[in-house]
Amino acid sequence: MSDLSSPPPLAAPATDPAGVTSGSLYRRTLATPGAVRFLPAAFVGRLPIAMHALGTVLFVQDRTGSYAVGGAVAAVGALSEAACAPRIGRALDRYGQARVLLAALGAHLVGVAALLGAVWSGAPRPLWFGAAVIAGGTLPPVGSCARARWSVLLTGSPLLATAFALEAAIDELVFILGPTLVTALVTLVAPAGGLLASAALLTVGVLGLVAQRRTDPGPRPASTAAQERIMRRADTRTLVAIVFAIGIAFGGLDVSMVAFAREQGLAALGGLLLGLFAAGSGVAGLVGGARTRRRPLRERLLRSVALLAVGFLLPLAGLTVAVMIPLALLAGATAAPTMIGVNAMMVRLVPARARTEGFAWLTMAVASGLSIGSPLAGRLIDVGGARLGLVVPAAAGLLAGLTALLCRDRLPDVDARGPAAASPAGHP
Image (cartoon, rainbow, N blue to C red; front, side, top):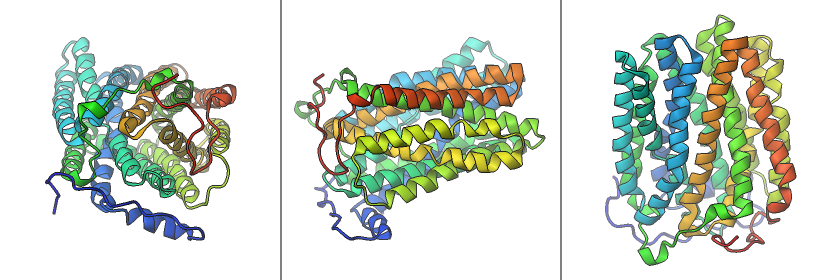
């Protein structure tokens, strides 16, 4: 039964005594009060993250015959999402998740309906882009909301790192199921099937999450909701820059893998290849989350970004689908550890009252990267085929690694449990 009453005080987070097993870490994390109630809704509501942009690309491509046009429409939506995500995150911190999520959901559904109608009817293309702006800019940041709930429930507990590993695995499961579902619906049912399914799942997930008021971190009184100047800090800017490069890689990979499968005469396997990439990432995230962390957080993050830079080169060697399958798995295994490290570092840098906004900046970075990677890869595919499109994730992975290397001194050197050796958020 949903808890729709005012949120009572949260129970103290469980601690992680020395000597617990890896399985015990996950059991204790899931035993956190309220966790098992918001996780299913957050999972369903997160599926559209992996469906909306790809569904837009494939729907527009079906109507126009061009990946570049489809990628451009999706890119405009992603840019709008990037511009609005921090503002939505700030509103979530200030007013609580229930009010803001419901408002964003309503506006998003209007945008999706307008996009479907404009493209299907052959309306002037500026209307396509206008609808994409509305749909993208109001996409509810369900993942950021889930991480904000974890950060409140487990503040000061080493189980928070395990919770973020679990979140990363859920993200990757989303990217296994989402693209596979979109491609199957577009290929086997209808060109608009991916976008319609995305909107339906988002509605179910958001309504379910809104019902779980007990774990909602807000609203907070205006006196305690002082705006943190997150992006004035060199350390948070570095995290955002790394994730931005990773977003470019994700955008290029999404379009290129689908085009690669089609060139091989196996269009329905495009989503499967993306799913295998996500599977490799999810397994790596779960394995990492089950391990005791002894190295400083900065060292772990830098290592994972270096591995990602190498891993995202691997799909370039995929000459056939059979060869691409293991390469996609190996490349994916480098993604989740990096994102886990980035989220853990953000928690160290940003105070609790601004964490949803902090996570939203990372969402903004991914969305901004997608807005560049998708159309860039689409244009290269139109010119030289899918293998040329795969140059985009390869180059973006190297960019992420180079950014981390050159800016490593900006990141605080903290261990898995201790506070960051940095000035309070809001002060450069």
